[in-house]
Image (cartoon, rainbow, N blue to C red; front, side, top):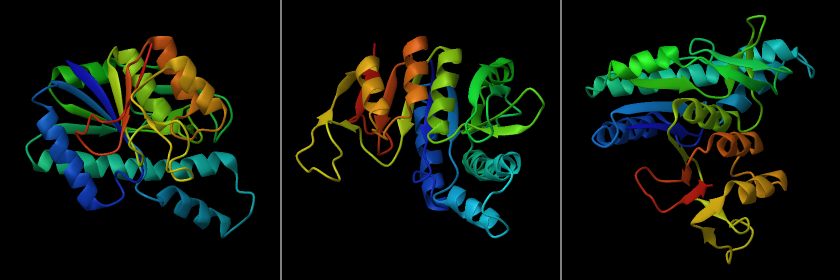
Length: 240
């Protein structure tokens, strides 16, 4: 069995959190023999990088911004791979370019055109945990591009679609609610929701799932789980 896991920025916000993720993935190996992990940049690193660029100009070159922002995910994947290998789990990390995530469109808001999964399939057959940088890819002229807000969700769901497996998204919320629980304490968590319903919520401004990732999940019939704590199945399932 195979699975794609995705960890957002808050989930990998510290070295201690990355270590906990590595230990959880090691345990998960008892249930899934093929694991792909997509990670975002640590904590608020993306904002920190943007602030550095703004030191020079209020309108930095968009190509160079994508080059700069890709550093964040590259740091996360390398650290998680090191953490996994240190506890006896063979792992290997790849940037979006290395793993063959082809994109098109504008810098800062590109879309995934295709994913060449040959390299991933090969490493999975070698029983290695494959760690992929979310939020990024490469365009037709070989430039690094980023996928915009929620891009790591899109990367994870697209990979799950190409690999024919489920996708678990771990973020800073423990599921999808009827309303924003931070604004309304009476909001109720939804156990299961359809792709169509989730698509409407995302289009209406709900930030728990990026709209493109929901559409990709629907197209490829990817079972998606959204949860907060590692190993806790009390989240929301997005299904057909």
